[in-house]
Image (cartoon, rainbow, N blue to C red; front, side):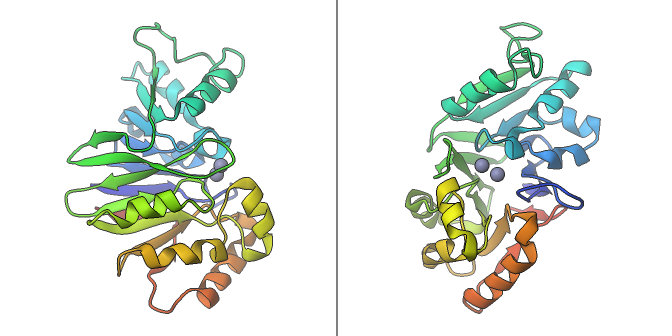
Length: 255
Ligand SMILES: [Zn+2]
Ligand SMILES: [Zn+2]
């Protein structure tokens, strides 16, 4: 099982793209602008999207991806997310005004875009592995995702401020080797982070002792405007020996 990073930033501007990870060619975690780097035939291989939440940097390319399936008569997609998130997609994206309602086209029985409501704990078979929805704490209803391969497991926080339930959950996964955690703002913007449900280095620090030794910590969703300062803060505040690395577009993580 492999995970390719298509987008890992909180905003756009070359070379950065917003959140989207491709798992084994047929599953996406989130559908941000990273998806635009795929060819149409690669988009047609995607059968499901594990969506963390309704913000446009995570679902903004979903209408265009569904359109590729519709225009090429592809197999269509299933989106897994919380009911509130699916309701927001119906009301604000696929409403016949911003975009065709692909949740009812070409027919209500077999639409291009199928919506499946899930809650934390919902587990979905994924090739030889498993995807499980995890709790998150954001300004709108949100999920994280746990991806378990044959030998290793990766947890993704999605967009989330401090969420003890997420860290409790992942600390009990014996095969956990990798965590992708969002760090949107530097510590100077902690009030903004708290208001919006995001992390800063100081907010994340108390949770790190819960991770198994040698866990690889990947940082995503850095605000492009403070990337350099964020990396300086990580180096100065975080313990020596912690395996922490900013996630970049094009990286491949093998599970
Ligand atoms: Zn968000
Ligand atoms: Zn975001």
